Image 1 (tube, helix red, strand yellow):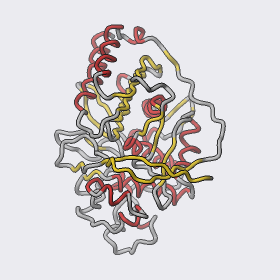
Image 2 (spheres, rainbow, N blue to C red; image 1 turned 45 degrees about the horizontal axis):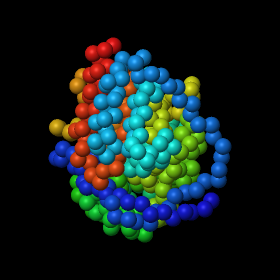
Image 3 (cartoon, rainbow, N blue to C red; image 1 turned 90 degrees about the vertical axis):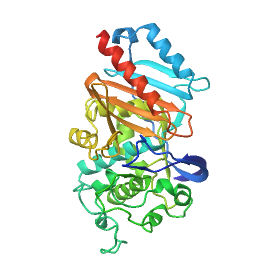
Image 4 (cartoon, rainbow, N blue to C red; image 1 turned 135 degrees about the vertical axis):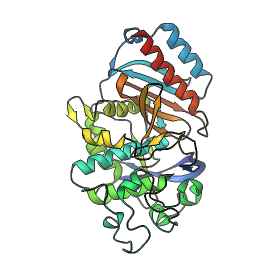
Length: 359
C-alpha cells in the first residue's frame, strides 16, 4: 500500500448541550493529511433504480422550483430517493454524478455503522465497556479509563472537545495521544459535548479489535458489499483512520448509505448492519432541548409529524433518512459554516408536506 499525502481544509466549533446549533463547524486551516490507497479491486457498483418524480406525487413545477431555490444557494448536489428509486438529482454547474465530495462529519455516522458491524461480529462485546479495555497504554486510574464506548458514541465522554482546539489537535503528530492529554472537563455520561475526538477514539477501538485499518475494514464489511465504489478515507498522522471527518464519496454513494439505513441495514437481500444496531444508533441517547437530539453518531429530530434522523457534516453536507415515508434526501454544499440548517430543513419539510398532501 502507498501513502499519498494530500492537503485538505477543515473547520469546527463546539456543540455542547446548552447550544442550539445543529452540528459542528470544522476548521478550514490547511493541514497535511494522508489517504490510504488500497490495491485496486473490481467491485460492482450498486445498480440504482430510477423513476419519474410524477410517479411519486411530485409535479414538474415543484421540482423546477426546488432546483431554482437550490441554485440561489451554495448547493453542489441534491438527491431525492423514494421507495428505493432515485426520483430527482440536482448538480450545480461544474459538478456531475461522478463528482466526489468531502462529507466531513457525515463520516461519524459511517464510523457508527462500522462500530455496529464490529459489535455484531463479536469484535466488541459490550457498548458499555470502559475504554481502558482497549487502550492498555492508559493507567487504570487515569481519568479516561472508565469512559465507556457508549459515552464516546453519544458524545458524553467528558473529554474536552476538539472543536475549540481544532487546529492544534489536527496539526499534532499523534491525535490519539493528544486526546489522552486533554482534560476531562465533565463527569463522563453527564453532559453532551460534541467532539470529533470521541469518534477518533472509536476509530482506534475498531482498528485495535479488528486488526485492520478503519478504511480497509470499511471496504470489507460495508463499502464493497453494498457496491459503494467511490468512497475514500484519510488517516491521522499516527495512521488511524479519520472516522470522524475523513470520508469522501459521490452524492449517490451518500444516498446509498442512507438507503442502507432506511432498509434496516439490508441491501439486495444482504444484511450488512443488524436491525438492532440501526434502531439503537438512530434512537435518542441525548435529549437536547430546542435542538436536535443525538443518538450514536446520528442527529435526530422531527420535521412536522415525521421523525427524521440525519448525518450532518461541516459546510452543510446532509444525509436525511425519513423512515415513515421512505425518503432519503442528500445534499452537498460549499459553505464554510453550518449557519444554513434552517433552509435545508425547509427543503425537506416541503418535500414531505407536498408528498403528504398529494398521496
